[in-house]
Image 1 (cartoon, rainbow, N blue to C red):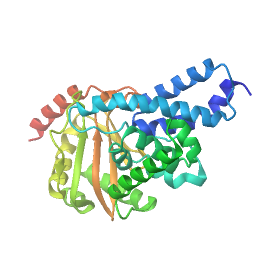
Image 2: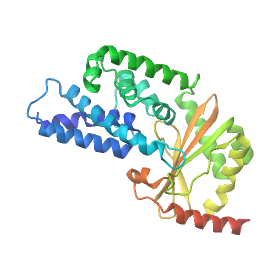
Image 3: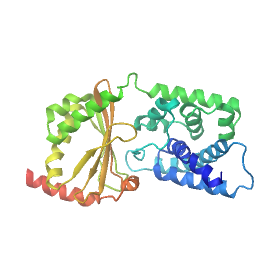
Length: 307
């Protein structure tokens, strides 16, 4: 088997590792490409190609995350991970860990960890790497990695919800939510939202965005219902779509270009958080991106006509 064939067999795993460490599709793809270049240039063949490439992509991702953290601290508004429509890596033995670790809620929790803690947690808890492999990947002793894993697990467990809806319940609730949203029905929307639900937007200063999170079932329901008439008038459409393993939707302008995405966090039979991502830099991997400013101007004009 050639190096290229070996690499292609492991590409989905490498991307899955990098995305969970970075929370960015574009940066993960770059990390995987850099891993290939280093593997291609390596004068020797490793004993374990999987261990070698996993270690390389992990180290690259840690370096990228360290520099990205400075940018994220200066980010305009709320930072959200880039939406992932399909996780290319599958492992039936670890399907629960893989699904949980790619959710918006989990990725935002991972943001609280140091780069080393995040890498150790991803390799150990999500992908089940042994501590010798983890230690080699992050350049620390096994003892240090065990301590990093304990700290990371403690932080993640403290932030996770106590009860999670199963997949079928999430899908059924999401279907009812999007039906109520399509109808602009405030009362039905409010019934499906948690009392302290949050609508959180990420425009990154590159698109219209909420000044702050909207909190509370009544406020969120009214806001959602209010945007339906102008959205319909300017022919903005949406299609429910699983995003980061959770119910969500992709919104498009009249020309079919991606406008923004929604991802729903569901717990105890209610929607807890709606993550709205409209930053065009984070949507480019989904296809041609709409001009959100132009759409917003047209929506405002339509709203005035509706009022």
